[in-house]
Amino acid sequence: DPARIDVRGSLVTGQDCSIDVNCVFEGDVELGEGVVIGSNCVIRDAKIGSQTVIEPNTVIDSATIGEQANIGPFARIRPCPTSIK
Image 1 (tube, rainbow, N blue to C red):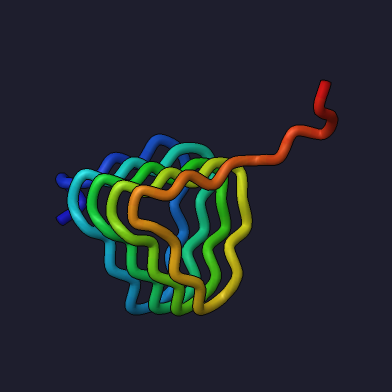
Image 2 (image 1 turned 30 degrees about the horizontal axis):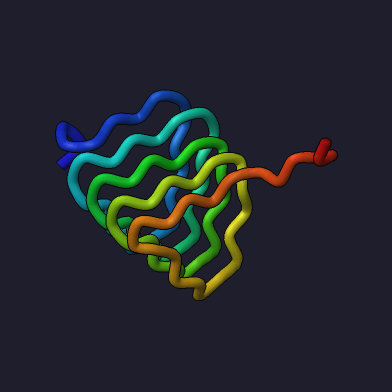
């Protein structure tokens, strides 16, 4: 049900993707084939490989996730700083 997710940018999905309720997609997001996104996830500027499962309440920011990965629940994936002071 498209009324139960929020797309704030572009969302491109492969075939047979499943997106649960209350998910937010920001910027440019690409989902491979067979990707499963659990409820309450926030995904920003990311590419998710085919057959990957993102468990509920996960936040992914500016990352590329490979194929057949299992992320979460309650995970936060974010960019690594270029330098640590």
